[in-house]
Length: 423
Image (cartoon, rainbow, N blue to C red):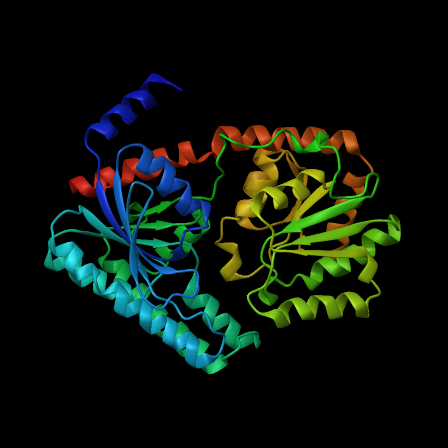
């Protein structure tokens, strides 16, 4: 680490910021951009970050917990699946979020940050202005566009509700909240450009991509002896959401084309869908195409076990259906594959294209079944190339996508915002 970075970190520790965050993440936080970036990296540098979150588990009464060097006010939650109980959960969350007024009145925070919430963000903006504090918005996913897209394409469980929610959130986000935010963090350079297209100055937008915790990475994945996958079995693997909007039936058709060249090839799916019918759809598609024995569903696994499957797979895939919503994301799975030393096949999604081409960790191909299948077959038949690509990807992540490096960027911006300095 160079002297300039060391000097920056010493300076940052001598004048820490205090931040109140209200987020759509649940407690305890699972996403690494919260648990590692904030809970470990920024908290470990002496910054005080308190949270207002909703419980991940069914919870009738709110409570306060210690986490990441700060405090968390945890909202009660109803985890039922009916429309009434879903609405009830959201109402419970908003009512609980209103405690931000009292917390901001104490004067102990430099700023309040809201992540991926809209009605609550209006409350936070009012509280920030009343108390002459900074208001920060963190947009990790284009939720208004997501709700509108699902209402249009028929994948929403409640189309009218999704259409109303999308339209309201779109108005709140682009007409009310972002124009008045002191700073905005987004997930990728593509999202930064998309938000700027709504009239937001680029100087007020900072892209913070997904990364990994580098301190405890397992050994190089390419040389991992197989314990979970049968030795000698040619296979490729997908780790992530199985929600229907991900269009993963595409991978089933890819699998059929791969098996036309390598009949023993299998596809492993690690993850789950929010709705049981989305997983049932994939199973039905597999049966319809005669792929039951070639498709292996492992469901949602503990991270260590999921990573073990990644390490043992021959090739890992990261398909992102080309759409406005998904084009602005920063794919966690791709960075995790690379960190674990795996050769990858992904399609020409903006950030995937950047990572694959800069690192040389695999193939970036069009969203076409034959193109995906050809790239997978090429890698399954070239183990030496797979190992070389895996090592290049791993080295790239260690140098560019570790959360210590990403925390430098966020810390710098947070200190500037807290001090009231212009971007």
